[in-house]
Image (tube, rainbow, N blue to C red; front, side):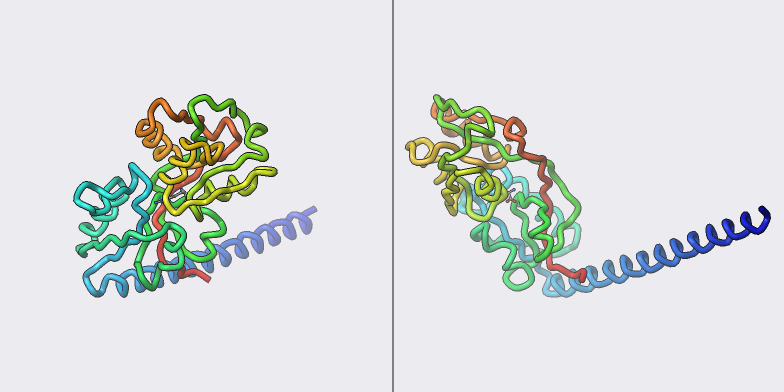
Amino acid sequence: TVTTTETTEAEADTTTDGAAVEETAEAADAAEETADTEAAVSEALADGMLTAGTNAEFPPFEYVGDDGEADGFDIALIKAIGEKLGVDVQVDNMEFASLVSSIGNKIDVAIAGMTITDERKEAVDFSEPYYEAVQYVLLPEGSEIATAEDLKNKTIGCQLGTTGMFLAEDIEGATAQTYNRAVDAVNDLVNGRVDAVIIDKNPAEVFNTKFEGKVKIIDGADFGFEAEEYALSLIHISE
Ligand code: ARG
């Protein structure tokens, strides 16, 4: 019995030590990653300028203001970050689908209501999430579409390269009709060229107000769409 107990204790010790070693290695990796990230960040900021890419077709997060400049929640957020870092912020307005590939060359970071996805994580790193959203379904006022089943075989408008597009592509028999600007998808919805538009909650609400009486919105949760988290994306360091 004594022997058994000892063995068990010894095993337990080994396990603990093994875990400890692993933890230490993990901590070292994490520290190294943090150091790499910090080095990359200071390199990006060495010129005293943080260049942020966005796609100002996504109110209220980003839109082109009356003065022709990008404005909105994300723009205010990145400017506040720049202030904290003590650098100037330059905002580059570009196509949403070009943002990820521009990080590390044309831009330092992207801030564009961008949802954290596993696919994007292969190309970029994400900050901590700063907002939780979900896709909404925008419909013509009199539409009978109400369930996931109803979206099958329909023509669905969406912005190119967005999670709304990925969802539309996954709907059985449906055609994803893509646009560079979300508002063009909404115009085609009003004109009867598409049956529905899939777009994030807050822009859906803005468009619902803008096209009042012509469109209506339904929470994507009713269609089984899952919650999404927005984050800043920056140059990929790890692995
Ligand atoms: N959240 C969606 C995505 O990450 C849509 C973001 C669109 N953002 C924009 N600025 N146009 O794919």
